[in-house]
Image (tube, rainbow, N blue to C red; front, top):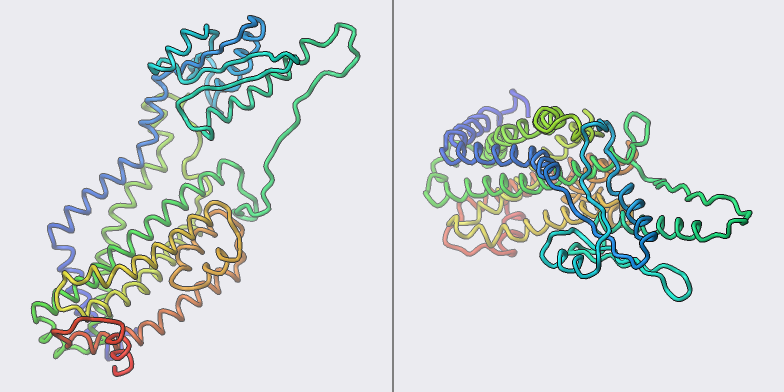
Length: 438
């Protein structure tokens, strides 16, 4: 919309009024401060976790009838669990695990009262093969259980090699090399991301998708609530006589969107600054041994631009629909019923995006990344964790813009008919009739 457009002056007045009224609200300012503090606390939470980990030493008990076998198990488990992180200083780094041999009775008692984090029972069967059971309060897929499953393999190898005859002519046992080679790894500047950057991209992608979902629902409800409040107070009858329906709708979406964006930036900027400086803060508070790498590894300028594009387009699409729904409501209390289907649509896009963040690239994920209103969520998730061709991004954005243009026409018709409709319960038939009549 240009300044020469006849809709521009009145729409700009409405947008300024909506932005001013929203940003002057005490609730707006208070919620911004509270949410910003919560976001900053979440950003520094990993440092608190590292501080707790630094002060905690987890005991792992090894129970074995054979003393020599028990010592082998301690050696292998200790080397795997107490591997120093990259960049740690060996002189000052402290082991987070204490692996030691214990008898069966005391180990069971310590596990029951929480004194040990797990008990590894190592026994030899009649055929000479080892049987290892790891008892732990954690789940079978926990990181510690996975590491100790590797330790169990190492214990078996050492035990097998120790029991070879002295004159055996076999070569020394070498564990096989293992690596994960993904054919759908995200690429940054033409280079595939390493494991740490890929993990960081997954976490950041999850944060971005959650923020997108929350922002769209909250700010969309702001738009619908603003329309319903003006209609219920009869202010709408005065405003509609001074400005046209397209001007009112444009000003409502732009003004409340600007207020929401201001709050969003006030929340996000401090949190991202703390995330970016997380290692420096951890080094100053905990020491250099607890610096574990860049928490924002893999994040780049194009990704932030892509997130901004999908955020703005997704908000405009949903805000237009929310505004048209709010125009049919005579009381703000009735908004919950009408907003539920739209919230479920946004939630469906979020759930598919979570699947995409897990590395899935099936037909459903690819298709929904092009289909509005799911594409802002799913395409953003695909960009974060997988290799997406430029034409796919252009097509997704193009279809989203075309959908916004179509929805704007329909929403304007519904808004024009709905703001003057009082005393009738909104339904699907009323929406269709308003779209055709407008």
